[in-house]
Image (tube, rainbow, N blue to C red; front, side):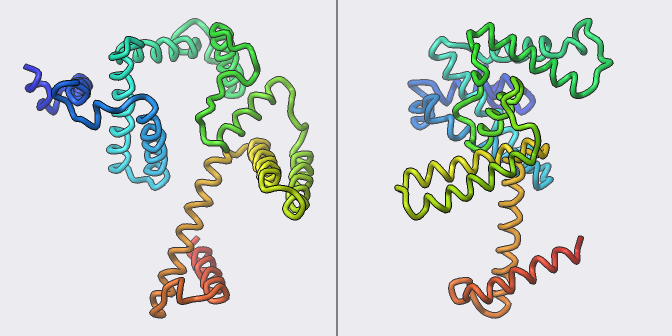
Length: 272
């Protein structure tokens, strides 16, 4: 019985697939779920991926378990809609990713040697991906870098892809020089150019900053995420100290909050 499957807590992925089918049933399903399509669900998929990353960063394993379930639901949601439209099914999606993992790991599942450095394995991985793109008629160097990625992450990937064919500064020094140049152009643009032109100069500066992260061996998205977390933690510390004084940030001023910010920083250093 279908209802038995839905209420069987040990039924695994088949239970979840059936739940989604019932939610999307045109006659008996959930009105909200029935109305959704790929475009409307995509933002939730991105949001759930970030919530997985957030739980990992906080080392909250119980929360991570739930967030991974939410992210899995997104895959099930998209595959259900794909099946309804005749594009693909959950089974073909699983087969495709399984085939891809086997093909991209010949040193594990094939006859290739495992006696390679991490750098060589990375180079082999990229060569296999390039071959896959060629099979999809993606001949351009930048083909396949998803447009829907967060802008900072996409900048990082575009620059990394261009660097593979030699379009890259030879050292960090040149990147730092470019940052100085772009920052000066932004200052100049601020006073004499239109808002659109100022935005363009600001974008150029952010783009080069992402490239600096790559040259330093850093993930700019992760670095900015950590900076956001640090700012949040320290500002909440300022709010806590103000509360001890019977104040809120609105009732304070920059001078007082700046002094409390320094106090929070000093406290953090003492705990390290």
